[in-house]
Image (cartoon, rainbow, N blue to C red; front, top):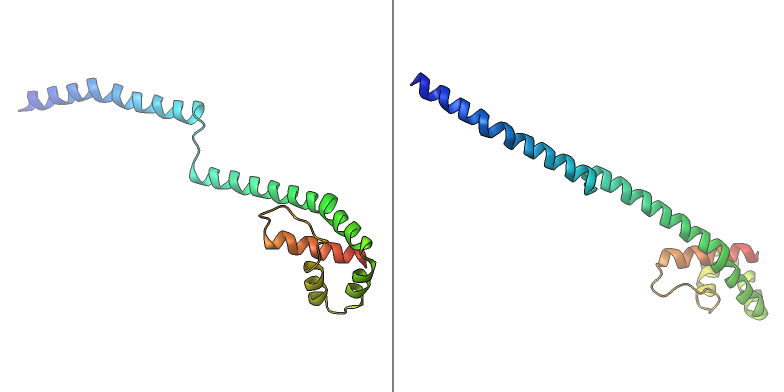
Length: 125
């Protein structure tokens, strides 16, 4: 029985070590060449890209959308005077949203529309 067990372990060493080495090599190739990443690394990358997208949206809002809103408002002097006469910022926002001053891309979020509107009102004061 001892010889059989010894032969079994020798056979296991002969086949198991190359198998384990093959798995290790495949893992290294997968990690390095195929850009495999863990869930945590993927979440970190997604968060970084979301932050970048937010910064781009803020720049677009500040440099394009708000000046366009201000120009549209200044072209409509009577409505502008009405909006500026309102004391409540909520009511001002509702009035501005009811005009065609704020132009945002189709499918833009309500948050973007609201932030452009608020920035436009602040710029007009």
